Amino acid sequence: MALIRKYFWLGAASVLGLGALFSFLGVYDSDALPFYQRYIFWTATMLAGTLATALAGPFVFDRLLAGHHTVLQLAAVAALISFPVWLVIGVFEASLTGAWPINDLPLQYLRTFAVSMLVISGSYIAARALDMIGGPAGAPPAGQSPVPGFLERLPGKYRGAALYAVSSEDHYLRVHTDRGEELILMRLSDAMRELDGADGLQTHRSWWVARDGVADVAREEGRQKLVLKSGASAPVSRSFAKTVREAGFLM
Image (cartoon, rainbow, N blue to C red; front, side, top):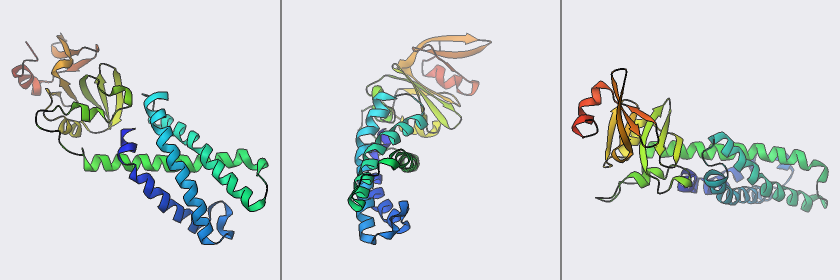
């Protein structure tokens, strides 16, 4: 959810941009109205959705569905924000026709949900892409650990958590902490760049381990591994073994 908060200006741009686009296209048969009325209607609708997202987003991502799959989280946010947007549309239609469109309510909500899902997913993907391109907002002050800033990428329950390790899984990164694990869309090389200065090192082409996260050292089938305090095991490849040993991780 930190990404949506960090790039909240995308929501503001969406209010104006999508309001103009929907007005131009005459979505929902609004092309019978003058353009300025369509723009007022769609801008108000997008504004309601943006404000609702600011409230529903943190609640869903950080509390209600913290740690769940991103698609489920986005769908939940879209379902919640569709209510105020649906209400704005209903009020607008009632002001034009003089009657509340009761018979069309279920279908109207489903259409609103579909658009909300499209907009919130697009905003999330754009925020994620900009975050990956731009990297961290800035290096922490000298002597300050970069870990808290890195953990800002995770749901709220991980704020202040102890970072044990990060491991690569396809295009995702699994973040191991004393409060559990979380998958984020990020490359290991970018994570290590953000964690530069933290007390830890790379032990394998797909693992970075924090010194404080190590509970024990073990050997399995002739291969060394670091046992994390969470119970997970981080492999130590031959190419990194010397560096890991010199750093005092291995005995």
